[in-house]
Image 1 (cartoon, rainbow, N blue to C red):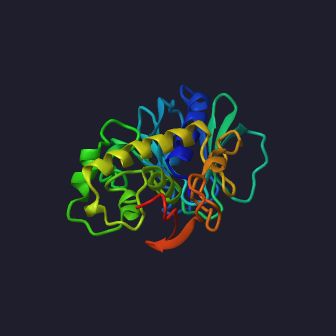
Image 2 (cartoon, rainbow, N blue to C red; image 1 turned 90 degrees about the vertical axis):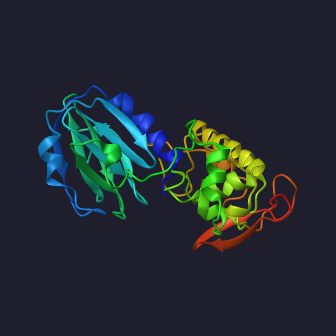
Length: 271
């Protein structure tokens, strides 16, 4: 699933292409995504100019004067900016057609993504209203993480992946952030000190920032809206490296299951 660096990479890629452009048509080829594509999207979006492209957690918000399109890529979704004469492929479910001849095309083989519409503040939409802190903004502090973790027995990796606490951190970056902070992924969140949360906060910001610089992580088929893969996979320290040597100490990377997700760590570097 695309995580924060991948979604932000796509946002930065499509924003210069569509901000200020007027939508002339919305073509829905398959409305049966994770939630049905609402008829309001095709009814309200044409004639509207895209004012901004924003990101909240893993959602992209295309704002107009009439309302906002809310897009989530799900497990396998892609957004591609292309010309109108580009051939339609099997899983191309939705096109936003612009007056300048370009298209924003949504492709999603597994159909776990969504394309919704709201005429209200999109950040107050039921899918977004209860989301936690953005990890790259000032609101994410060690004190916040420490306070949120008190009395919680769940493992720290699950804590990081709880979108009501902190958003955008999926499996890849939870593993990498905990390695960078030297924290074992199975440690109880409520038993981690404020000092260690300081290290974890810094690690989260550093890992996500580095991933953004590399255009995200491409393990299978992630690419940005221009079709370019990410390169952060070349810098992964633990994720998907079970049985390989730790790049820091040489010990073998371990793999366990936490919250039904594959979890990777170095038993020597992480305590």
